[in-house]
Image (cartoon, rainbow, N blue to C red):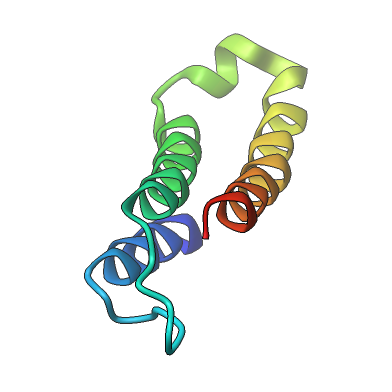
Length: 80
């Protein structure tokens, strides 16, 4: 549920709701943040994936949840 909220924030940011004053923003930054959230959301909601991956499901999910936003932040620093 929080991942869906994060995706919603990325969409709203893309619409211009949360841009910093003086910054025009870049659609590539918004798309990276949106893609990161959508990948994690798809991973968490894929039916039967936890059964197939077994013990790897939680570590991979945590890796997506931790590494994805960091990569998006670094991408933002490089492009803004």
